Amino acid sequence: MSALALPAAAQASERPGVVHPNDSLGNTKFSDAVINGGKAIVLGTTAKKSVTVTYTASNESGITLTEAFLWQGTDSSNTDDITGSLGTDDNPSCTESTTDIGVYSCKAVFNIDPAADLKDNGVAGTWKLFLGAWDLYANAGYDDNVATASIKKLSKLTANATPEPVKKGKTITVAGKLTRANWETGKYPGYGSQSAKLQFRKKGSSTYTTLKTVRAGSTGALKSTTKATVDGYYRYVFAGTATTAASTAPGDFVDVK
Image 1 (cartoon, rainbow, N blue to C red):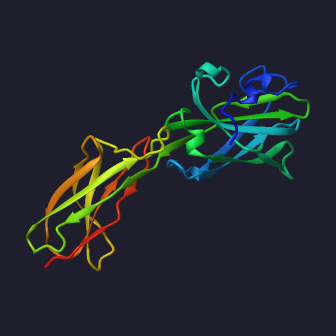
Image 2 (spheres, one colour; image 1 turned 180 degrees about the horizontal axis):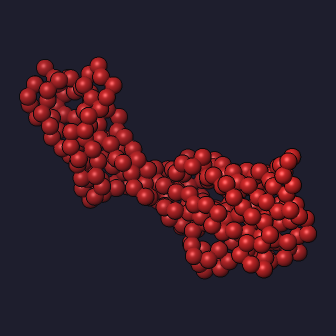
Image 3 (spheres, rainbow, N blue to C red; image 1 turned 90 degrees about the vertical axis):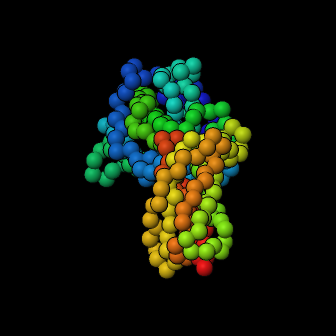
């Protein structure tokens, strides 16, 4: 993963000899950008993730080089206004169309290591795609908001139904906990004050039914009760938020006597 710096197309000093663009776009146009297949980028605390970005770059003068960044902030040309930046290890690869002169299909790969790249660098939520390019005459162009991506924290959820076994008609208590990745500490603290659905699946069935919605406490702890009727599995399901991915606890089986 590249160092967390300003994109070179927006900062001429980063690439000696390359002209700073005269406007926010230049002569190269970017379109059809797709980040991670259109899905949210979900990251835990240690597992690295490879994220592919595809896009089209068009310039009748030809293109010699492109670059790609994911960033957060208000002004890509001012380091003080950039709160987060992720780069690629290698420059994007581009192939010119055989039928349309100056139209290139490009691919960039971001290898994100949350422990190194997201510690004190940006926050979970919406990130913008910055694309830059240089034509055959070393003229630079860029677009700092070609598309947006959602980078979310991985969440984990547990469920434990007791007692096991239980007599029919008696009360079952289903406890659990919702946690999510903290990129600064590398741990999974409780994610409090969130709602999760308590669901049940009868033994032999493949379908879960929602019994109720439960709100987690300040530490992420979940607790709810229900009546035992038949053998089956209990679980909690968290729908996710703008900053945190959805998660589902493994079903916990209860034998009803």
